[in-house]
Length: 612
Image (cartoon, rainbow, N blue to C red; front, side, top):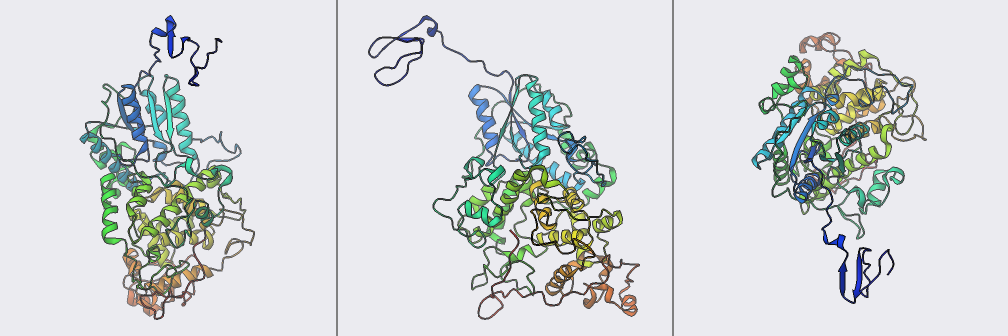
């Protein structure tokens, strides 16, 4: 027998501590008579809750709970409100204020923004509170704290194992994970980062490496993942990359550890009061008052799941039979059936109401993308759900692929253009006082409610960049602050696309990118808005100065005569600003959508689709 071990007739290698005395018989060495035991970690297992505020279809909480039960350890649940994501801060990587991990020659850029408005913070608090209540109903507890996660979690008992959903789409979040890992290691603990279910696809299932094999277009992504035609249908190839099924919430939870006191702990009575919680998070009385005056959608996992269930049953075809005089650049009729049903519901992208309106829940992880995918199977708008989720996936994968380049002025495409940050232009745009009624309505709705439909976001962004010439990052950072459904990958991914800095533009400069903008594209977009809403109902709702303006001028108030202004009690330049762009000539023909519900003989196929 060699000291390294021998192989029995069965082909199994015996450990060196075992000697073979006869076929089929093992004789143990003395040391082997004592059962071998490995040390178990001393501290509890901790689910560090992040943008996964739910129990259903959450692999991360299942991992944490399973680890605790396996080792007979207790399990704590912790959520941390990081002030770096709430406070007024410079633009850029709040986890690297001195640019030690970036370009050292950079200088701070201060646009006076918070990272998060009081209104979004209020909804955020409500969603965290909903999870705390769900855990309490199951006999457990959520520790809610205010502070830097690396400081808060360092207050855990020695030997703690912290399990979290990693967020590779954000350099800031990755920095925080690294900080937590270092803090825990100093106390004999460790951090386990899990992919979770924030994305539709599991990273290990992807047929390409995100860092250096990322497809260059949305169509290319759909193709490599096995979608037959991601633009028009839900059909997939036999070999398509799998989308995993949803997993259930843990049937039971381990015992919670006693006596855990964490820095920055928020008492339950404070968390239960929106205004008190916002004050604890650092918002001013004025900000709190404004946030408390607004209605918010119901918060939390149960609300998210109920909302989506109701939408599937009652509202998923709300874009059917909605004739539009102009379809902008959306292929409204390209997927319509003869009876007027559009499984992709393109029309809703152009309407103020939107479509699923589940993005604010997705952003905080109150519902998962793959649950939406799995629950919509067999429904007539499954194709539309897939399309929206795949766009989200595209932006998430791009954010991982691009890393910090996503936030550069030149964008991932390294596009050099002249920009301005003129504070007067920026403030007029943010407040909805540009003198262009549709743009102002969009910006006021956004500022007031935290919501703006896709077309409004895109048009207002395009206006800022190409009609005012303002640095696109100003707009992206403002959206980050005020959007109720802010998602780093979706927000910045859409902005670099709108600003045409997502990739090199070999075909030449974008409209208005150099010299004086001609506003032709804006005039086309506004002409389409006028064609679809000739009475200006949307504008009248959000721009009260124009409520008494005649329909003829509601989209172009600068065309009013002195007599018209007097009649409408709206003098341009006084009651309502003159347009920052100068007077515009809206293009009357926006391009009909040829909707089957209103056009005899079927639909005309559009010649353009959204840029992929």
